[in-house]
Image (cartoon, rainbow, N blue to C red):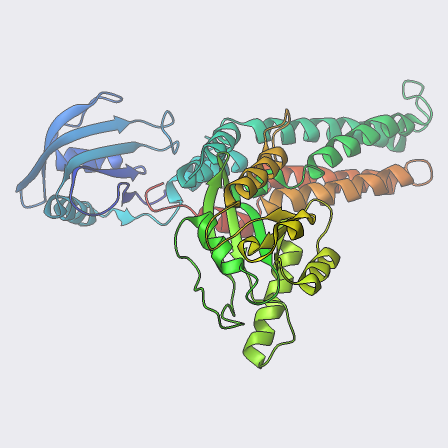
Length: 439
């Protein structure tokens, strides 16, 4: 029998109402003790006076009781909607301690729901993402995943893989039987090809789901004093980075999070790219170059007066990146005809045009498609492993169907790990540890 757990599910501090949740086999007994035998009927909200073991009434509150298995966790569950003063909350938690309940760990309620089959691992991750959602795009993706979009995708792949495996093993187990045609495993070639293509299509989505969860990454790169920090502050609409006339002021990466087109965006100001004057600046330059490689979009910022800076950035930037010519207020108009976005980060002239272009790029790359998005690195890695196994299986069909069958089994296991069908304890610990207390 598992312990009965409890947690404050609303933020601590003074409030009108504080919600305390309980789950476990002893919930009914706990309610009987707290309400002096007036436990509410299941699924009926009831007002009850709560008392501690000494018989002292410490609150009059709304109590809800859900009997297993028709509850969030699949266990007996209760919610106490107590008054939100710190003293009342503390008295309630102390009373639960006296009755032998234990404080829940992060994600323990949802983990119990997973263990009782109330939701699969992808749905649990969707719930965590919904709680953490800061933008409309994140909310929509989380709701879709929590509603089972990824579960349906992964279970569909698993079902097809099992059919393929049955075809392969049919020839292995019954090679001489009349009811099993020769080369039955060859029938697996087309469905294997279709599965590889389907999985590949989801892998080749520009990591859309992961970027919606964590943010579309933009790196500002360029020489010292080109105006990267000033541009960052304009885009962030606050003084996020220090701006001085001293070259090399920015040594480490400065990040700001903003919303563009309903999507989360992370903009990074990086150290100026030049021959470093000391070890600290050298480390800053190294980090700047690494962030530029990792970024979804690079924005090169050059002093419009410097042909050298312009040429250097043109060599560093890739197709689809943006080039910004800053300090246009200091050059003659005829010099503004170069390729790139001309602006003045100091005055703000031209920044709105750059913002519109960045937003167009973000929306184009992250906008919803028909298919559900792989939202986490672990999803992508499992699907990549499955594709590799299926490619190997397809090559072995004719000469070594036994080995092909083993590769298909590996792919099945990858899809089962995605939904939590197989017991991968380290994955479960990592997923549920990211939840907030009380969920």
